[in-house]
Length: 265
Image 1: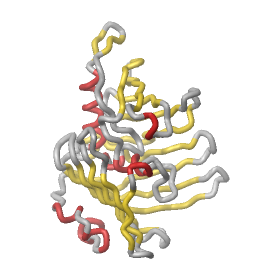
Image 2: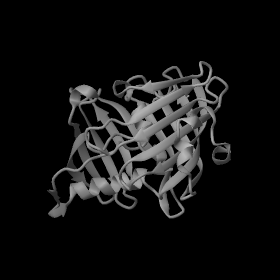
Image 3: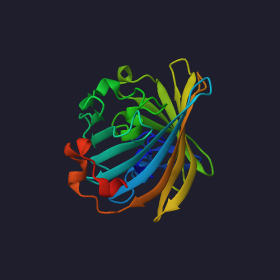
């Protein structure tokens, strides 16, 4: 579903219009539509997810969890909860996010660790570190702020728009730039390649399988690859639903220790 669409696409912000093949493309409108398609399908949603982590030696780890998401504003603030159920070493772990659309406001992220009965706040400086041992980052899960990058349309094919993104605060991220490809038919970002300053392509986020669910193009399988080590994480989504009427209290701090069972079973 669109909840983790950053496992498959990084949120983008507008830039100026450019001309490609004599057709004027409004990059700002293009980016906003991609953001809407990737992160704001319906008013809320849920999905069951399975994650397979494969390291550089081919060793595998599995994770299973349920994702709940509710929009506060369309293309704006958003709430998210991720409830882990398997394996036993991560069971009952909960990831909570309050996503903010404001330019100068960082998203709020917390991780509940049941073994310690501890709620750990994820600092802004840790947003691009590993999410529960996978190749996804915390920021991949909750979404990169739409205001943090400048975009330029660099190419266009019959099926895709191709844009280059430069971070406005380069010291806050590990990449120099990334190139994102947006599918024209669905408006979904379907491929993102990250580069270092020497143009080394070291990381990739891609949509592997997309289908329509309740009228919304939905990513059912996504993959993040470490192109240096050869490791990768594959994410599969099942039972995706939209507009299910999630109440606000599902996303409260109380749900960290007392999960809303009726919504995650």
